[in-house]
Length: 111
Ligand SMILES: [Zn+2]
Image (cartoon, rainbow, N blue to C red; front, side):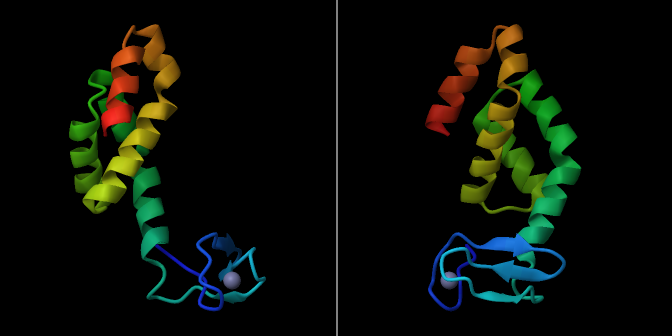
């Protein structure tokens, strides 16, 4: 988790073109190579998003989805589950139409 080096706040935001900004104390600093891990992860996630959505629509199983996330995005287990829940919420309307909403909601709960 990225934190502000000045105040330790976790509400760090990206300020284009190449800075982080902390809305809490106003500190800004450059995005360094050490910190860019989660941005790369985001990029991989968006690349894999279509595939993850397809997987979620076929079988709305959070466990299986998290494994797929870990494979495609390279996230650790906790983060993979987080992303899996995000995917499931994203496709909830579609799942509702397919009559799988309740199952998906249970999956999100227990994931
Ligand atoms: Zn700060």
